[in-house]
Image 1: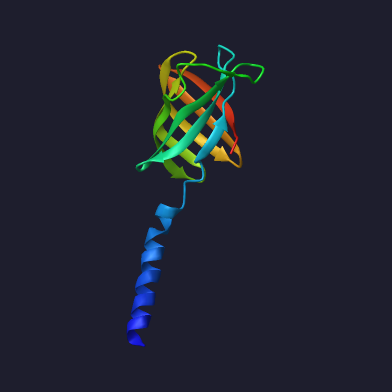
Image 2 (image 1 turned 180 degrees about the vertical axis):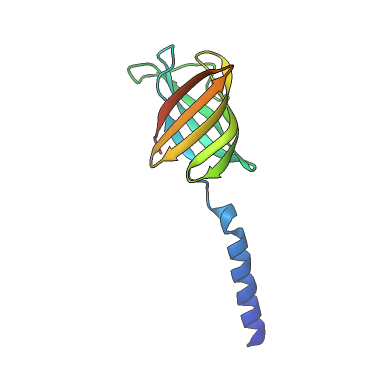
Length: 133
């Protein structure tokens, strides 16, 4: 009987230690951006990349919601974002395709809404993205 208890304890301990690896970060998902200066908006896939959060452009759309061809599709938009607790993320970078600029960035997740903001040389921008799935 003792070997069975030892085995069950070992499996339980391994499952408890591995649980964080099984659980995706709450921000992981697909988000719809607000339109940029060019009127184009995107779906951005946010995913875990090592110990950080990253995002890439999944699709681009015109103002009427029709998918458009864009050389930005597949490009990395967010990288090195670190979870800071309570839905906040920071110390990352975001690339704005409409201005072709990279900003120091932070994000705040609240339900299905993600506030994304960034600054470069004192010029700041922000958008509210909505979770698509």
